[in-house]
Length: 574
Image (cartoon, rainbow, N blue to C red; front, side, top):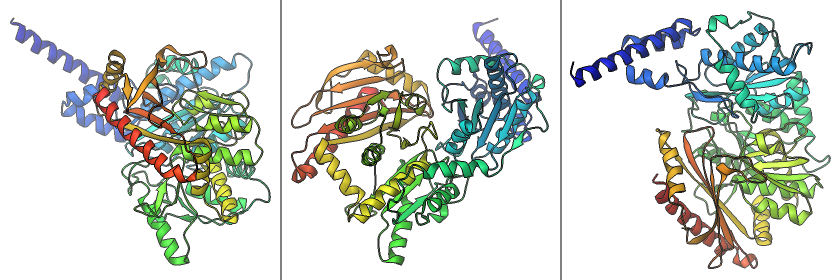
């Protein structure tokens, strides 16, 4: 037999083995929708599509699971979720030990496609494994689930959500009994338990026996949320709110009304849950165009009432993030979206004004301004890796934020980012400033004059081929830049090695020397942990002499950030 014929035979054998694996998966798939989808692929012998879906399994990590909906082990589906739930149940039984009673697992879910099904399967597996399960009564924000874990004394919490990912995705987020997201080694231990799960027929799934919670958990969360405000502080503020087609509208409305604020004006087209996120390309307040409906609602409100709203507040679909926009006559839409670092600085300043005590913390990819603010107030400061799984573990944490619109303003209530309580604090600050005849934008000006302009931005490259991200990181390590944006690289930290205060992670950090009126800068490059993106986090610090220098300092900072982006595109090859 010729080499070509042998290669053809091996390819046919490989294809037949792949089709056999797909048929095995199909035989135990409990979901009629994905069974039909996979049966069609098998019948059509769509081997390339099947090869992608069966090239491995979705990997469970500190972010839990997240991926595109569909049939097969590399997609989010009921088969994958049942196996994940069985692995988590085995981990919890191992932790509990003999004679430890029945651990309680609280399950929450958003309004994405399949979320309710995944929550029900999770509860069924937990009860089948001899654990107790309690499911939130309806699609609710992630912070409500994070709160419920500690409030109910649960051993774990599971939230079915893909947060602000595109509509085709879903995910699975895990908290342990301390109300914190998992970190190593728990993620690896759970992954091992998931890998050990055999055929689905061997996973007991109860038909009933779990509790569906009533409204008391949400009531308790809302009561706790109002406690972040100062009694007697101003409440007169005009807010436009968008839930970005997610589950935050009703919870935010109730939180504002119970706290004594006027009910926010909703962006009507985005107020109710819509798993297609039909008015936005990506349901993330940071994405270009995502805030257009909110700006239009604010302009319509102004035309009707004869005065402009004070602030626009945007939650992402699971309401754990909080975006803020402020009036800006120079902006095309009359409104300017604040960066997460700017909101982080505003909330820190507000909490200090409210005499908050404890550690203020942020991440290695967020602005260094928080350190300056904390130092000026005589408060401890800490820096962690990206994500609230790390931030929420800071000893004595009083306030933590990350630049991706995540803020933890009440760590004793919710040990994670919480877009609802953050929104309340933004509203309280805006109300206090309004009473004093000032604005959020003017307070930002004050901070820039006092501490210097800390200009931040992000270069985020979405890819369809994940290997491009690995190749870009390899290229940066093989050919490290000596300058970025006209600033010399004073130090390079390969974060895979870890540091005295940071565990290892895949990332590169460049500390940049000052030059030509620029005080210095910092660039961090890392793969996203939840999306197919390479992210570059940029910061430049420009000293400000007085208020008259502010505009030119901001222009100088923006120019350096633009040069950072050009240089990084060349350096990464993306």
